[in-house]
Image (cartoon, rainbow, N blue to C red; front, side):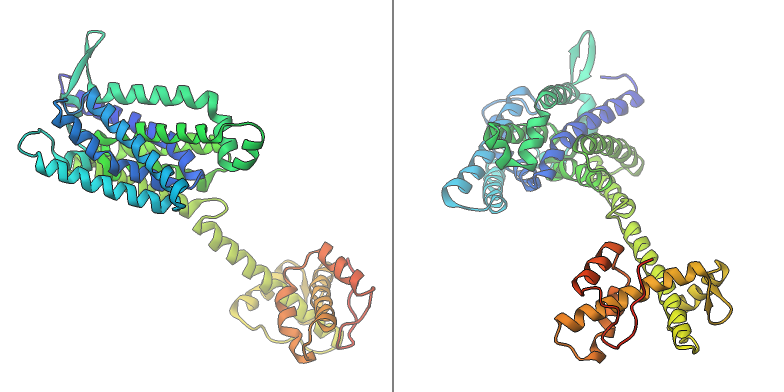
Length: 416
């Protein structure tokens, strides 16, 4: 045990970081396999194993209790798979049945044996990271927290197993049928992953407890999956998120004098929220920005098309239909696409003709294939005109046998 308060905090942070890294590593594979609920099931279902081991005389936090918890976790996995194979029960439903049953049994055992065992159910459920530095074992003449030693051994074992089997895990996760056809033992690979999940989950009890360990398993990997798409990068980023969340969560819990496990879980969720906002493709900010860019493009194209039609009819362009289209008209004048009140530059004319061409081609296609009156062709074409590219326009024109007019008898501009 460290001699100073700072040393104790460092040991607690180190233990939390190691456990978080182990959980994030296996959690990445659970998330891509859509088996995240199994981590929650295992976290709850090991309670009877811990309680029975302590009742049998094992020391809380010792190797025997750890082994009993892992054994109970493996029993949970086996029961879920058995229910799926024998009863045809969906995996999520089977996990719900098994973990609630075993968790309830654990609560009953702890309650009945409360007078004979030194086991605080709240510590199992919510973790006791703050007390980890006080339970030490000698390692090379140095007192090291027992929790750090066990969790470091778990992480080292998981990494040692994951590195040589990573390609098998990826193949089994994304194409199990193809993996079976290629001779990969998919069932053995899956069982190995679930066994690794059981070990990592049990290692996380002292950090965040059985209830919140699912946060370490699922949230960092889910956040990383939003930001990157190569699986090994997801795993590395998930580990970084988990370790960062463990460090920041512990420091905040110490400052606020509250449960470290709870704050760590909250920090991990905050990381996920930030990732969901800033994800480059599916994030909220990217989606809003994409909608804004699309609306701006539609406003510009509508304004160009309005001026082009006015030039075609030798009339006055229709008034802007919205403030955004009015702003688009001003911007097109600044950019030199619109000249004067009702004229287009060469570049503006080419852009406008492609919008009108898309519109009239789609009207012609609808007029041939859809049983719609002429006055019902304009609204859908007005929407589709912003989505047709050159290849689609050429295909439609070829299908129309290069017809030059739309259903209203107006000329369809040629492709630029």
